[in-house]
Image (cartoon, rainbow, N blue to C red; front, side, top):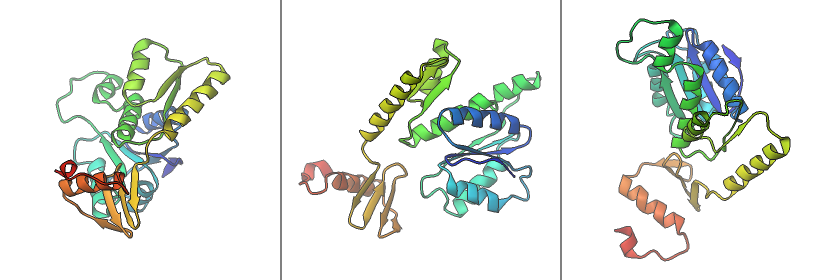
Length: 238
């Protein structure tokens, strides 16, 4: 079942981490990332229809579960691979218990050590966006004003960090600044006629058909399309 609906990030929870997924969604929404939270309840049988819909309509999908490798995350990855759902650039991350012994302790401390609490989910989403070269600007609005918190927020991929309370004028100015930066970013899409390259997902299409190139062929094609209409010296292609 879908607990809340968004457009950019999908959090697929199995087990008792649902409350943490909802907390993470609140934090992501505060950072401008529209987030869906789904309570899957069962790994088998897999709700393939719901998962397929979520993967096809979101930029990032994260599974969160209290299981080791081979659980819900593995099933979702297999479904996405079999149906080609990652071919268009979807980023999938799986969060699960570490594959090692954990000392007995209070549950909240063990979850924190395992990296399955809300801050870890938020960090996973931001890293996935930045590693894939997403141009979506991220601003953190928070009451946490300590220097380590600011550094951590920027290091995981945020473009700006604003602490509460803040003046509305400053917030609006920072938003305008982020928008200007995004406008100055080169487009990840290169195209020439029916030929197109998406540098975020490293996919090449010709008249809507995906081409599978060797790494060297891909590099040469990117160079040529980025300089369309210009003469490229033979030495640049070596």
